[in-house]
Amino acid sequence: MNRDEARARFKDAGLTYGNVDAASLQRLKELIDEKMVASGLMKGSYRCNDKVKLQGQGKAQFFAGIECHAFYFDKREAVSFNQDGFIGFAGWSDDTNVQPILEGFVAWVEELEHGQ
Image 1 (cartoon, rainbow, N blue to C red):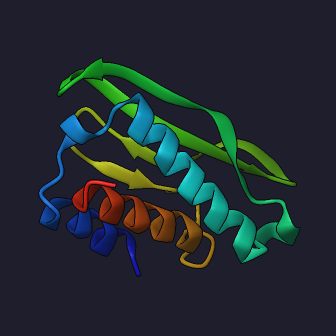
Image 2: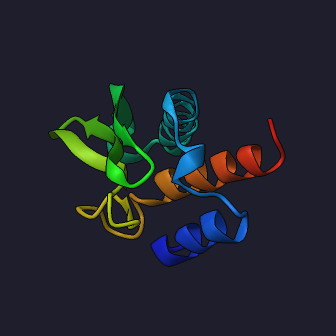
């Protein structure tokens, strides 16, 4: 899967930033973290940071994000929901290391889509 496919999955599910609140963002972090741990990437040290970022509502000053870390870095973007509507996925990452993030994101989209 690539980043554009994940963004399309969000849109195709009929989701909007209105679906991104503190509880759903926390669940997204949990799902991504599970995928990171299971991947064993980065010498098994790939994890989401504990805190999620959420500010504003709708598009007015809205930003939401989850950061991650590994043995050689701290506080890098995992997922960001930007005010302009762009959903970012680990812009620092290559196509391999972004996979757990995309997999967790798509699992989250499916949960929201099915009302779980």
